[in-house]
Amino acid sequence: PPLSLPYQKPGNASWDFSEIGEYLSDPDLCPEAVFGAYYFDRADMRQWGMRTRRADVDVSAIAKALGGGGHQAAAGFQTAIGWLPDRA
Image (cartoon, rainbow, N blue to C red; front, side, top):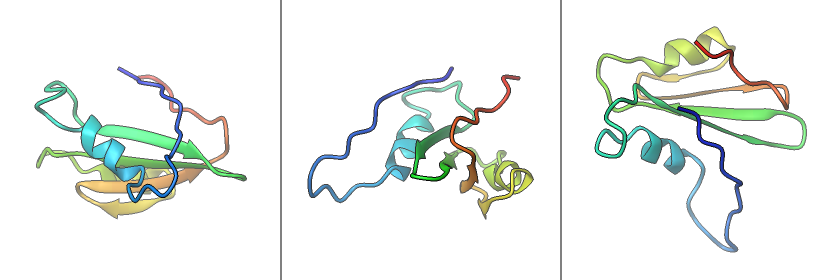
């Protein structure tokens, strides 16, 4: 299921948004999740990331189909601000 959270990075924090994907794809927290996808809006585009911990899932194939790239367990792509994927 989708999860929408406001993003506010604390001052001088060293973490980045890929850690959110690691959390969302954690099988101990969400056993039914195939992968975690997340985004944040930059000034001129929406930056997406995906993470999986499952060996039978390749998130780079999804990212490549959307003009991005990455590797089996971590990938990303960019879209216009406001773009959201169709629900399957």
